[in-house]
Every structure is written in structure tokens, then in C-alpha cells.
Amino acid sequence: MSRDRFDMIWRYLHLEDNLDPALDKSDKLWKIQRFMDLLLHQFQALYEVNGFVSVDESMVKYKGHLAFRQYLPMKPVKWGIKVWVMAESNTGYVNNFQVYTGAIAGKTETGLAYRIVSYLAKPYFGSNLCVNMDNFYTSVKLLLDLQVRGVPLQCFG
Image 1: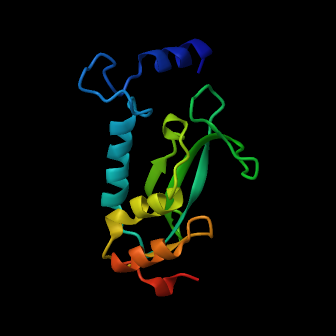
Image 2: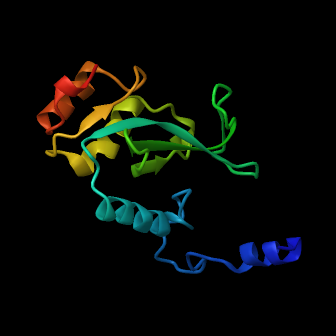
């Protein structure tokens, strides 16, 4: 595809009406948020995970200018968009995700790991889903809260 056609696609492809006053433009993902919500709904509706999932961060390669582009030197993709992902351990099927758009107003978020795992596991509370994660995400408070919500502790470790 020629560069001119590629530029035209990006110029004229829109997922939201930029002039719609009802849109919350304070959200850094406002132009694609409804599309991402639709994808996520389909990911969860069309496939049932086998009971074992992993939570970790992933990088979507991106070289353009973006306020929340991340640099992670230890990852194979060093520059890009960080996405928190819950994926089935056996197949790698992504059943929940959240795009990291950076700190809000420059404030460091406390309890980030707790919030991430709780958000990603929420659709599966009560299902006895076994969530595996590394030590970045693990805390006593998180493990106890997950156990209360139907995520058994015996699947960790």
C-alpha cells in the first residue's frame, strides 16, 4: 500500500465523533475507549477460560508520539504502550486487559498492583479462577481479598 493511501486511512478513519459534547475527553483513550470496551466484551463472551490465568504487563510496540508511551528496558519491545493483561495460562488467550495511560496529574499511584489484579479478576469473582502472578503484584491484602471473592489461595505458589 502506498504511503499516501496509508495516510488517508489514518486521516479519515475515526471511531468517535470529535465534535460530540457528550464524550469524556479527559480520558486519554477517549477516541478508542468504546471500541476497546466492545473488544473486551467479545473476548469474555466468546471464550471461557480453563480456570488458570496469568497476570502481567505487555508492551504493544509503538514508535510515534504519545503522552503515555513507556520505556521498559528489560522487555523485548522496549518502547510502546504498556497494557496490563490477564491471559489464559495454557493458550495465551487474552480475557481481560487495561491500557496503562500513566500517572494522573503526575501523582504516583499507591496500590497500583492491587488495583490492577482486582480489576482484571473482577469479571471472574466467584468462579474459582486460579490467578498466577509474579511478586510485583502479590501482597497479603490482595491474596486475602481474592480468596474472599472466590479466587482460591491454594492455586498460588
